[in-house]
Image (tube, rainbow, N blue to C red; front, side, top):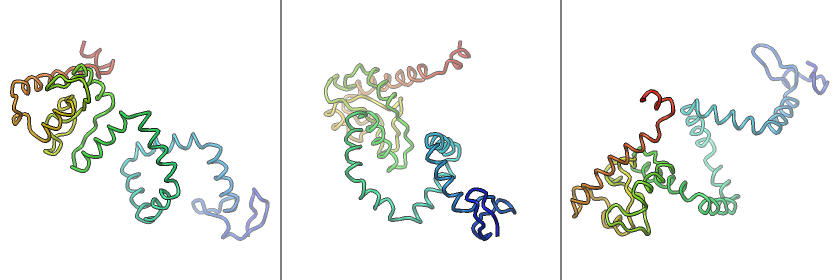
Length: 217
């Protein structure tokens, strides 16, 4: 038997968890209440700590998630069913507020399906639009513009600053998954190739850190 220092009740040893080789000073019930209150009072702090841990232990976090999902196969189906209305409202709001991020996520999803590593960001998207002066690289149209792969994703080429080109919807549909050497206008294709080299160089320069710039100077 042991006295709990929190509730002041004498309880069996089985009601106390162990720390190393010794029983804890408070019983399991009191410990549960204490940690529950602690989590509520320090929610923001614990979230920051959790995110930091996941960044530092990505493989361990991924393995834990896989094991948890395998042990609870019906959890997400039930959760999504209960919160379907909230999810639809949240998705609609995100589409209105951040269409650039949704395009980034969609590109990564398509690249992942083809086992292509792609990390094209919203900042890169804006830089591509600026480089091409918000006009199609092939016909100079200024409406219904899209950023897409100059060398196609379907052939294993990720979207990078040396492969991202601004095209109108019509030119993009005509190009489809063709390689640049398969395009009809090879003069224009050669021009785009040159501009992509410049685009990569400009991006590399603008993303240098202050320390790297000092070293370069």
